[in-house]
Structures are given as structure tokens and as C-alpha cells.
Amino acid sequence: MAKLRRSAGRPSPAKKAKAAAPAARSKAKAAVKKPAAKPVKPAPKRSAAPKLAGKLKKPATARPAPKPIAFSAAKPAPKAKPKAPPPPRRSTYADAVLLYERGLQALQAKRYRDAADTLKRVIAEFPEEIELHERAQLYIRVCERQLAPLDATPKTPEEQVYAATLALNAGAVDRAVSLLNAALQQHADNDAAEYMLGVALATKGDRQGALLHLGRALELNPDCRDALRKEPELEALRETDELQAMLTAAAAAPRKEKRAQPRVRR
Image 1 (cartoon, one colour):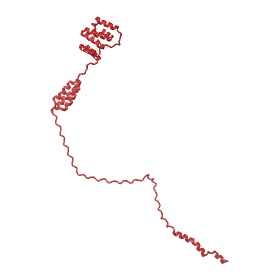
Image 2: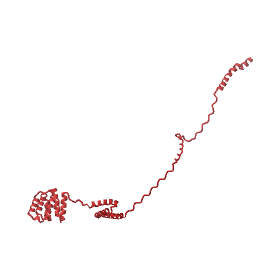
Image 3: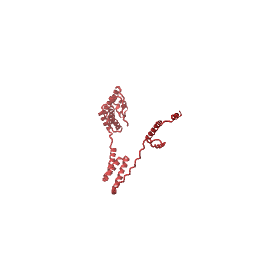
């Protein structure tokens, strides 16, 4: 019995072989495994500087400076010829300028006749001084415009009556009569012209002519009787029956718009 227990406690060779088979298989698998990977190098530590937004551009490589082009020696520019000096002024030029300045002084003093005569002498006595001729002719025309008489001839009947009044006051009776007749030719019903013509004819001693035109003036404007009664040149006519009858008829006529009558003053 004791022998049987020892045999039961020891494993048999078959069992030992069976138990060793898995261990051999695991060793065989370990032998077939891939070789171990190479050790990985640790990544370099990054600096704490912030990342750039974009990639930095590579600096442009400087181009080599171009080589200077060798020029052939240029020919020197020809020297400018010195200008010829102006021809000397003739001795007459100073005299012409002096006479020309005298003409300008007379023009500035408004002595237009003297200025024109002096400037005309510049042209006549110094024909070779063409430069002064053009300016002298310009100022001669200015003097001629100033010397030209203004057209003071009265044109309208009103202007002619006014000019006749001034002529009568100055004693130019014939001129006054001529102006008044011209006014009546343009305007036959001009009572002022009729009245002044009657006064002018009375001054000349033409009694019938004066009464004719004074009567016409009273017909056109009865208010003329007021001036007629006060006119010194009509003192002799106021005593005649003809003029008294005219004044009476004018007083009975209907009154019209009063017009100012020119007065003859001595």
C-alpha cells in the first residue's frame, strides 16, 4: 500500500512530457517574434517664441551691379562764338530821344497841340530812327483824338430850344432864330419854340413876326401869358392892341397842364 502511494504521488513520464509541451511551444513562438523596434529619438524641445503667421520669405539675392559701358572719348563741343557787339548808336539818336521825351512831357501836361507838333518833328527830322517813329505815331493819334471838336450840335427839339435860349442870352439872336426854326420843323406844335421865336424876333425888331409866333404859343399853351406879361423883351409889344387881344383870348380859354417856359435873362 505504501508503494502504491509513492507511485501515485510522482508524475509519470507521459504526464511530464505532456506538461512540457506548452512551454516548448511558447518558447518557439517567442523565437518567431519580430525583432524589436529601434529606439525613437526624443523630439527637440520647442522654444516658447510665438509661431509666425506666414512662412518667412527668403531674402532676395542682390543682383550684381551692371558693369559700366565703356564709351569712346566724346569730342568736345565747339565753343560758342562770342556775339558781335551792337553797332554804336549814331549821334542823331540822342537828339531824337531828347525831342521825343519833350513831346511826351507836353502830352502829360495836356498840351496836346504842342505834343503832336513835337512828335511829328521826331518823324520828320530823324527818318532813320524807325523805333521811335512807331511810338511817336501812337501818341500823335492820342493827341488828335483829344484835339477833335466834340459834336455839340443839338439834335432834338428840346436841345435846340435850350441852345437857342443860351444863344439869345449871349446876344446871338440869329443863331437862336435858326435853332428855333429847326425845332419847329421837327415838332410844329412845340409851344416853347414858338414862344422863344417870338421873343427872338421882337429882340430883332420884327414886330409882325413876333406877334405871329406869340399868338401861336398862346393857342398851344394859354399859360404862356404869365411869362409873356413878365418878359422884358416884350415890354413894347404888351402895349399893342393885338397882344392885349391875344392875352384876353388866352385868359378865356380853358386851362391846360402848366408847362415851364424858358426865360431870357440878360
